Length: 107
Length: 119
Image 1: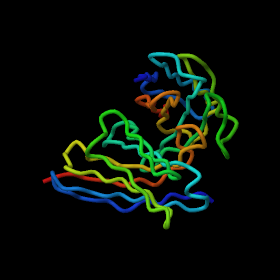
Image 2: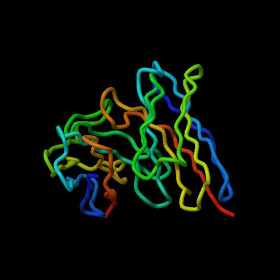
Image 3: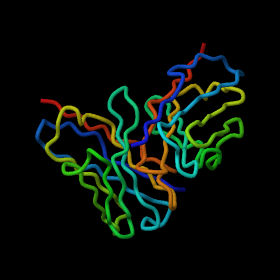
Image 4: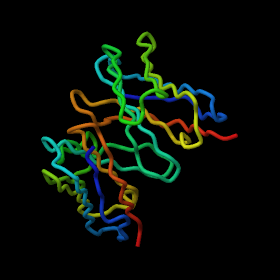
């Protein structure tokens, strides 16, 4: 099983800041099959990024994904008020697994 | 538009069974698989497995064989998750998610079903 470790656990930022979230895999993720989701309290997760860098339909271009192998990054170029949430990475190159999440909170 | 609508919250006693439904609309149900994911209170996401809606073939994640069963009723575009011999640690929100074509991530998600197991 591929273990995904996300860092930081909590990111305290202000609207307008750039946010950089990390997802590290215990072994290489096949073909960069990595997705990112956003989850707000009381809501289901929402797909943001798939295949490491492809934005899902309707996702603003302030969200971008990068990386390959074992190291992946989700970048939010300028935080909007609605971006404060928990973010999860998921690999699907083998039996799917999720990271433990990064909470982006208002400083 | 694509929608997945799940059944309502359930309160069960330990040892009982529960069946969660996930009704799909806005697309051809048998063209996309359905993933099942759970989230314990205050915790992260855990993949339970998926079901091929064309063949009915289920795939279960490690640790979710035996008590967890995925099924379908394609006549009403609905997927089901049945959990038997419920334990307190099964208390969680259970989500269905439409599986992307050919790849195992969830492109659209149901709203979730809270299953509470308590005596």
